[in-house]
Image (cartoon, rainbow, N blue to C red; front, side):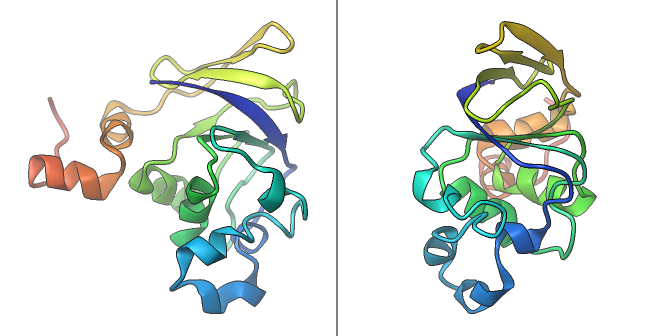
Amino acid sequence: MRIKGRVWKFGDNISTDHITPGRYFHLRSNIQELARHVMEDADPEFPRKVKPGDIIAAGKNFGLGSSREYAPRVIKISGVSCILAKSFARIFYRNAINIGLPVITCDTDRIDEGDEVEIDVEKGIVRNLTKGEEIPASPIPPFMLRILEDGGIEEHIKKYGDFRLEE
């Protein structure tokens, strides 16, 4: 699985409140409308300027806070194809994998907003095409990679009739 896109850069401790502002909590049953406000508390321009295939690069502890499963879903709906971060809140990480949104742990210090990157998800390599640099990343475990390749846990279960750990 390879992903290529333009980067949006964020800092440390981006919470689920930054991703889905609490004032829009009433929209959680209208996920498409909620996605129109994704990340606006971290960057007010993001919801209007994000394009399909774009990538988020962030610092430490991305997705901290509540266990809002719709936080990674609205990021995916907005068109973001992958999130790179130094670290993720555990529940956000699993929620992202479960909805089919790749999340890659790597050092994002040498990635800037607007850079073009290519990610080899299986090998755990991030290539900053703008700077001509290669950044090692933590590869996603094979069973999680399979869930991503199937489009998320729901599609995985539909495909196999159950949760499948081996080939």
